[in-house]
Length: 545
Figure (cartoon, rainbow, N blue to C red):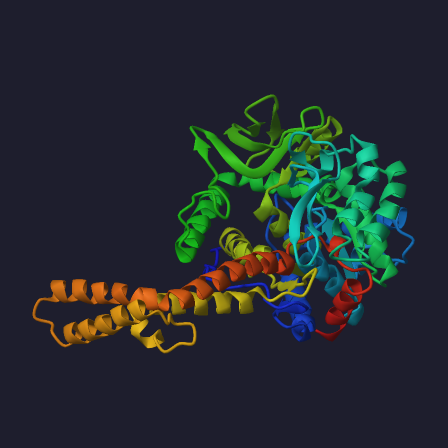
């Protein structure tokens, strides 16, 4: 099978600039068409995945996803789930999205509202993946504190500081600090928002302490409980649960068995993406997969429960086996080559998991597996949407298949109404007038704020005469320029009051701009926003889109 070429194009995707606006591409009116098209593509995929067809492996992966997501959601939430039958042959359409289990901004949260609306509209099941293989650094959040007239940023800790590690390994170590988080946030933002969502969010989060010590899961399941109060009926599941399933192990085996060819395609696609987007950094949007003699870097992370430091996975072929290592403490072998069935090697990966060793996908592999094996339609944010051109290219060139289409959802929601754009426009106008006063002071001598001192006006009169003279003489251009600048300088005392007024206005505008940019940022956590206004707005936008 000859792989199809999937062209990578420069895409300009930007979040809306105004409060309460949502970005959707393609429009949600096309969701039904996308679902039908993606289902037709999936039904015809006969790609060999180490002895199994892609369609068969996807059917098993989806059935397990729904069964485990339903069980997990019922365990943590009282909200009803959307279907009962999880048999492999009868799984309903699945619409999927995902994000790290953290206190993200409302532009991310709006995807969950859209996910629910689309599932009900198209008789599908909505699943949100908690992407817990990503790294959590500082367990803290930045709040907007102070007042609308004098706002400032204030970091607020969720938990004590620990070394960076994957979300799925991060446990709460200071229960007292975690338990006081909501009250500390409420106190910080009370001058900006009177009824922040942090209070109803973290009341059940404290209850979840008995169910899980994992920091990310507490946040994610508290959010999911809060969503149920607003009629959101999505299923939830940590990505780590998916990665512990047999279909994902089979997928890993397939990628490792074909790594030499895949690595070439992967690096070529990255190079093309950087060229199209004119990116100089070799680590953006992802670093190339390296080669060190016979050792090839695979697109997966590996770590152990005993040492939860995420490391790159390297493999090399050794006869009928593949050797693997994290180049630190972990190493082993899999019974695998390009021609063998993946059954035995997948079982060996399951054994590794039982020993506390975890293999997790890197970013592009996460969406590659999710889109091809877990769902009929994936909802991306803007960042993921840009990078998933790479996923499309990888699928087309590696498997020779047409990739499923996805939709992009984002939005902009402010904590407090502000218009930095208007302030910036006025600042530019003031800057322009200051420049004009410097180079064309004669235009402002009749201004109400021009100096009335006789000496200044006499100097200005002489300056005007000199400037007019030299503007009409261009034989010696160097001297002409010097004399014109001298004439402009002679007129400056006459316009000094106006310049002082404009400088004071510019200083105030700079302060206003800094204030309004703080107020207008879309990056603050959803839990800082008003309980009374944000959820109804997101729900209405999702219903109307």
